[in-house]
Length: 365
Image (cartoon, rainbow, N blue to C red; front, side, top):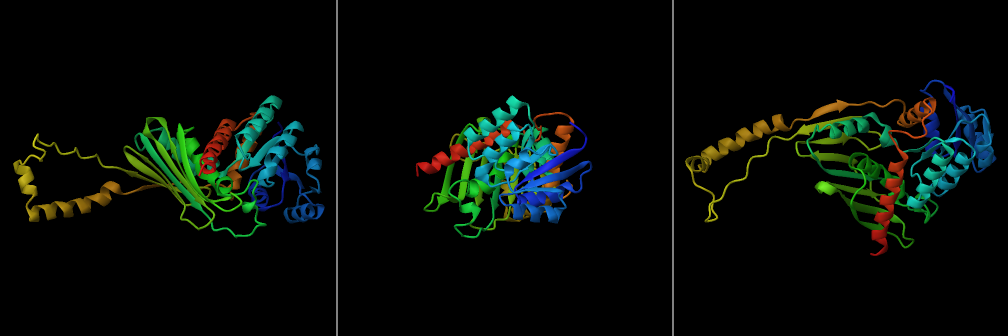
């Protein structure tokens, strides 16, 4: 493909605006057209971002020869149809998360893209952020020893309004809206789980307002994930290993720094006699003296911060966070690749399969 990459924006909501704004810091790429459900909204968006062409029908954008790649930023239930239409028109596709509503839809999109040999990628911000990429590298290289557990939580208080898209019975809920972020990290670092357990808080329409899940992996690894639309949670992403811990400082989709703490060697457990009591050697008797025990405790408290002090790694991202995912798509197109190495299609399918497994647990409660 030409070094000049021309974008078509499908949708005019928050994500579309942020994506267009993020493109401004990149060279040799621009937005050629935007489409919305109404001509008025498309024209308003085009004026604001100085986009030369606007359409009041999505189909017109797919037919535009001045568009190389379509950024799908419509509502969740429309992602499958719009991705398929773009692919059939021969356009490269970058689809805002979630990639689809379930595993079957995700496979349909992936099969179409691979059949037509058209570039297709899910735009899920954490995958492209330098901090997450660095975390992935450190975990893979054994910086914290053998990975053992992942914990991730994300929560935003949403407006309780039936008109809110988050409460739409089709495509709404905490799992699809924000749960995909921690799930994406779990798939990136640990892969597909061997087992899933989950529970959720749902309303009368079966919309999940809050949920949690435990993903189990071979070798004893676990990923504990939770997301809620009922509260503003302090975002958390922590990966623990046999020799340390890595933590992201900040939201999963905006974080720019990591903290690494190396664990001190684990002290061997006491050896017990056949009578069931610990041996009473001289060292044990000395340590039992209150003054000695207090001194040892004070020394340990002084050494603990030294042994547990964190190494902070700064990984700034370009632009507004959406820039990184746009940059990856552009590089793939210039290199004539049809899949991203940072957000491969198999991982997007895996995420949707995990979501299906999570929801199956809710259906039997």
